[in-house]
Image (cartoon, rainbow, N blue to C red):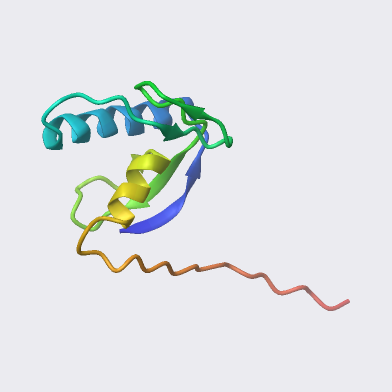
Length: 99
């Protein structure tokens, strides 16, 4: 999975939160109250999360051009058992033009 960016668009955040709720219901036996980082340093202890942003990812196994995940969902996947927790940063640098 490649992290492509961050979205502050409310529609993207809603999609990410719906996906996270679906993930939790698929893999957790009972609904739980979780603590989410809302992206602004504060926390909320109820679902849905109150994220101010979501992560934009490209998952080669998905038919979607991009997917949206909450910061909490992204971190759970990143730290999941069996992953190596690698992070690679890619930055685009532009050259300054000489005068």
